[in-house]
Length: 448
Image (cartoon, rainbow, N blue to C red; front, top):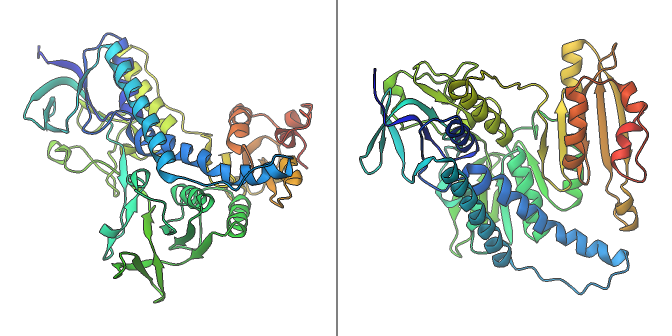
């Protein structure tokens, strides 16, 4: 019988890898984890957490203005990017320390180095140390995709945006997904002139069309210059150290910063997986079965590197299910149906379940209920910014197939409502529920 240094070696210290390592160790496995950067992965270090903190910081621009309408004598505010940046990074490092402490308390051996596979049961660290393991888990996440154009090295991605030395007066953000829209809202509220370039005619694919259109309308009114079918052809540095961006129609746009938010690709290259027979899909995602097994029996993968649903809570569930299945004697799979998601734009939007278009395609029709209203706070603040809630129901059974929202606190409200969609409740269940007044959430049970 083969003897190994560890029962499990995890490569990647993000959400999925950390959860898998901790749960496996809790089941009694001897576990090691290798991470070449900081523990916490994209979400904690250069994604969800620092981004959401920037969102909070940028909201004060509107909050301070609105406060005057509520009777507060607010002096003209001044914003300091360095203070916000450094406080955010300080919180990131605090969380990294908690991740490290949690793994240490669980008995996981941590190696702060890059790791590659040198055999079906063998991992080689950057310093040449070789670790053997009965099972190896790949949880290396994803990385920003860059377009193949001249001058990409002059721009930044969501990896670097949290470390910039000053707030740009002008910024071009290229992309049409949640990252692009979130940072467009952040920089707009912090005072930058934002131009959002989307190479297609559709933004935020996968979200309901009415909700997307409302965000575009509001973002435009807030001063964000949104351009569709506008693809960057090249970026050049000007004599004054600013940048000059040329788009496909020949127009040149001067700017101080270019932020690429053009998608994320599985971080699977250069690890030795190809040589061992691990299979990949066309975008480089590792192919796994329902138990997260690759084509090599001893090698598994979870999280963004398998590109099923690139969301932190999904990676956590995958890592947990893997550990329970392989080391806890409790085989589990992950249910990918009805996963709620949010875009922390200004205002935020949130969704769960089918869009109207998806429901009509799947069931041949849909019953649609909406509530289009101005939140009470916006009324007194004299801001004509309207929220929109939308419910998509089965055309015959009236089961709620999807909920879609844009407006203040939409993600906080939708998390609870997602339980109802997942449980298969009908529109009648919402109608029979007494409204909680006065609140924005009450609109969920008042839609017509």
